[in-house]
Length: 506
Image (cartoon, rainbow, N blue to C red; front, side, top):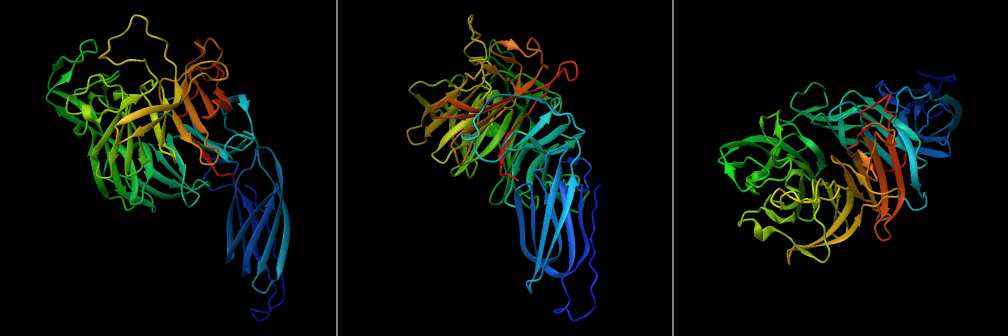
């Protein structure tokens, strides 16, 4: 911990006549949260209300609100470096004080994934920093990392619990899911709010709607997320080879879209098995979920905003569906096999050359209405097709679609699967985000296990690796391509990363 102080002593007098004094500080110290690295907190107290200006590392921070106490996070710092800080204070009478201090950051005690940059065009990538959550294994601990525009780590949170769906909110804090609990946390590691079924802290808000999964999506009223229930239905398929043959009864794990207000109240709950066909299956729909003792029928893995409603991704159904603001089904984007006659009118008809997505993640709508998804592309067919004798190898991709909800058609507008070194397969998780300034797509190939049909182990890496790729849709050019991987002797399981977010530069 680094604390630097200065006290200026002057004589007594009226409040307007007393010179501007620093009565405590300035101090520069590590955050109270011991798991936060590469961040510092600056604090200073004065005898008059002041405005503050900080200058360091060619950056400037201005606090224009009048206060006698200033607490300011210092972010964007690299490891093992010395920084010169210039402090400018001015009071309402125009009196000023300028102080200079030096502080240092230490070497990172946390082992981050190894990095190999395969492509990087700094002039073409979306401006900002990158926020990534690295997992050693599914459900395990997370290391949250912010990389600057030169791909150097400038903020690290070494957490013992899994953090997912990180996004910046309007206050500059993070909304995250932390072990199924919704969290607002600042970059000094201090909780602002937690929405939890077991309140413990003063900032906690009671939420009794179930463990939240995958997304903690801000809405005008509060948040949207995914929960799961075990539901008994009269009949269900028992074999992938005969998906039309039903037996029963059976218990399925059904996903729900839940809407909550900011006080933790449940606004609405939309069980998806009531809106789709609970007897239709895809690959993994006959996987047994031990948490709820049920067949993992739908496995919804995302809820995303859409004009006048929401998009929901169901991995084990290989579809993205649109729900309106009342939760009513509008359309189904995906393979047409196996649907009941009642749902066939909701299926989007393909226009032109189109390849359906399989086991997809993270749909997102662009300003012009294109829907991008990360297409894991586990297999290339459904159980209703049967397993072909010449099934192609699975290759993951980024793909975008344009939906016409009036004509009930869909057109494939963009697909990227041939990276700078060939095809990549990432069987689970993933992310694809439109970038607002460049129109690029930033995609997280979350847990790759082979590249160009060569396994990671044969390439000399841990079992799982990550590819972070930013693509120009118009040209198909990768303006950023980074591999994160491990030494198999140190971390044989490798690294996973469900999602990556581009955030404003510190």
